[in-house]
Amino acid sequence: MDAQSAEHAALAFIVNELARQNEMWGPANERVDVSNGELFQAGVAQLDATFDRRNDEPAAFDEAPEIYPQNWSGFRSYGGDFANIGVGITFLVQEMKRLAMNGEDLTRLSRRPDQAYNPETGLPNPVSA
Image 1 (tube, rainbow, N blue to C red):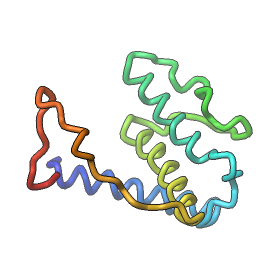
Image 2 (image 1 turned 180 degrees about the vertical axis):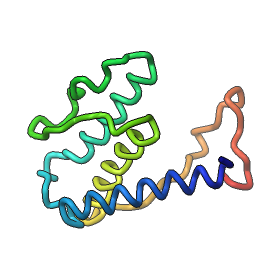
Image 3 (image 1 turned 45 degrees about the vertical axis):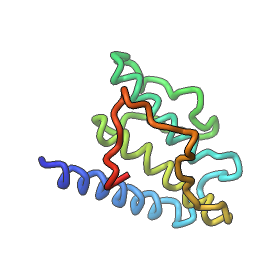
Image 4 (image 1 turned 60 degrees about the vertical axis):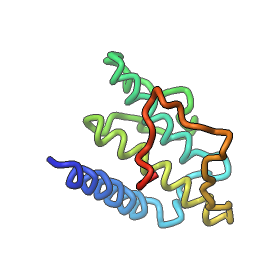
């Protein structure tokens, strides 16, 4: 698969997972106690377990990571790394949606002049940076 097709596959997965979650819990995700950041916690937990499995921890999904919401059940692997990362990202997108609905500033700050790139790690493409 080429890079553009892979990017489309990743975004399609996230859009489909968002639709699935919205169908289960409503577009504002009424299921969760959003005041405690449970969507954020669930997303980080999914990514944490995926990270552990990628670092040769075969039992990474046997128990929920500590950050997983205490009152949630059903922590599991959704398949390969692609699916688990996608589910984790989707929980984070749901949290971003909640923050936006609550009026959080959506501005992305640019790099300041005193935050120079390290040339040893490679400079970004100035056309696309």
